[in-house]
Every structure is written in structure tokens, then in C-alpha cells.
Image 1 (spheres, one colour):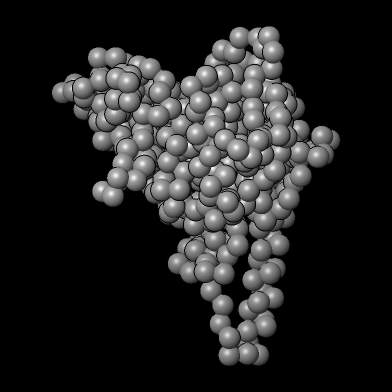
Image 2 (image 1 turned 90 degrees about the horizontal axis):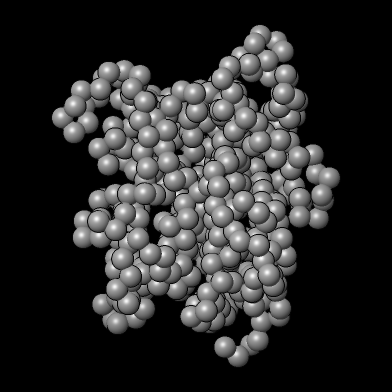
Length: 417
């Protein structure tokens, strides 16, 4: 907790971790620190909270790879207003480029030499530079389209009494961010703008698709009736297009509790690799600039000795914080109606999205996207594990994810539950 409170000014992400991410174009909020982080977050965080919409229909068997494409399509629509349609187009070049760039982040992070910094040819030694160039060109074209649209609107309004507000009229994250920049008369270098757009794309795809896969995997394995409980409240909701950040906890408490617990126990981001940017004091110990730190947030949340001190509620049957309990976050409101407790991290029990000033700005987006997909699946299907499924183990790649594809059997859901 003490470490995270001093981010992003005195303590920042470890340089040999952030450098490979920056090298593939992710020069956005994920690796930004200090004043740069402060400036970038102002224009990225509000857009993620306000622009929630859409439910998708899918029938995956190889869930992990399919949900990677689902997450890519959803974030592209929400962020850029562009339908990549990777679910139906296996040869989509954007999907291939994103997969390539994810693979080389880890390779570069583990490299003893930062070969990608070699002038002129460094980015192309491993081939990643070609994918980065295509992605950068694509995102620049999206920005150009928006600026052309705004120019046309401005020209139109000069002959009418109608005025437009780029921020309020925005339909995508990109339009919202650029509208806020124009409203505040703030300049952001094009490379940082593109870096933030790439960061948004990357962060939403891998972490969210992994969390989706794990949430479905745990439901398919459950033998306590949890899947039917979630399906019941989803079916009672009726039109899932009415879901919003504001009403999710009240209309889908069981679904939200399951999502919160999956994220807590099987967090894609289990460990933060940091270093002091300035002199910092931790536990009364003075740390010089450049001191390497490793914050094991998921370990802290799961440690059994923290049961009485962490802000993790005990499960309905006395399950401690070292156990997976998808009903743990359920409670009742003042009227006795089933509700869900919103996780907090005041005591270090829910580190999945970070803590303090550097908490993930896309937290609400990620949780909502997972809920939308669970609703779409459970409303239509009963799910179970593929017979004789190989054992699934979580391993660390770009994020902590299943080592093999999660394969589910899907059958049409019975109306009566």
C-alpha cells in the first residue's frame, strides 16, 4: 500500500519493463509516469467511464482465442468507431499485428540487450517494427478522419446559429479525447496521442479477454448451481441493452460478485515491477533513486493471515480470502434486496487494478465489458467444460493467463431455470 501511494511521482514502473512496452508504441497511460501521466490521464480516463454500450452475440468453443477477438472488436468500436470484425475475418491484418506486438513485448522485456534501440534498424530486427508501423498509420488515419469531420462541422455551423461541442457530441473514445483537448485548448503531441490510443487498445484486449475466459472457465467447472443463478438474473433483466455502469450492481449482483472474485483471485496483473524515480521512504527505510521494487498485489490479497485486516468479505460459508468464492461479494441493501458489495482497496485486498493515483483508468470499462459478454453467453447457452479437458494452469506472458485454450461445450439454454 505504501509503495502504491507514492506512484507515479516518487515510484514508477521498472524501466526494463516499460521500455519494451514503449518500443512497440505503447507510450500511453500504462507506462506514463509523473507529470506526463497526469496530463494523459485527464483525457483518457473520463472517456472510458462515459462511453459504455453494446452487447455481442458469440458461440465460442475455443474460448480464449475467440474472446481475444471479441475484446478486439469491442474496443475498436468503442474507442475508434471502427468495426474490425475479427470474429469473422481470420486473415484480418490488425489482429495479426496486435498478436505480433504482444509477443514481442515479452521477448524484448527478457532480452539482455535493448536491440530495438539500435538507430534505424532496431525496430525491424525482430520484425515487430513492421506491425507497429501499420498500426501507427491506421490510428493516424482515424485521427485524421475525426479532424476532417470537425472541420466540416465547423464550416457548416458558420452558416447557421447552431453550435457544436466536440466533447459532448462524441460517439467514441477517440472523439471524446480529441474533443476534450480542443475544449481545453491543450496540445498533445501526435506520437503521445497515438501511444495512448495503442495503450487503450492493448490493455483492453489482453487483460479483459483473459478475465472473460477465466470467468467462463470457472462457471463451467462450478457444481454448486452458480451458473443457473447468474442465468436467472440475466434472463429476468430481459433487454441486456439496458445494462449500464450505474445499474449493474443492482440488477446483476450475482454476476458482478462472480466477476469481482475472478478478478481478485485470478488477476491478469498479479505483480507490479517498479523502481524509485526519486528518493522514497518505505516503512521508515530510505530508498535511493533507481531502487527496484516488486509489488505482489495478488499474493497480498490471497494471504490467509490477512483475513482480518484486508477489505475482503468472508464468504457465506466462512470462506477466507485465500479461497475462491464467487458469492463472497453478495450482500443485501437497506430494503433486504440482494445486492453486491463494491470492492475497495483501502487495506490492500483488491489490487487487481492497482491503487492510488495510478489505479487503472479503464477499471469500470473492463468490469462492464466482462459483464456484457457473460450476459450474452448465459442468456443463450448452458456451458460446460469439454470432456477430458487438459488441466489448465495460469502462466505469466504479457499478462497472467491460461497456458492452453479454454474449450467449452455450449448448448441452447432452457427457458425454465
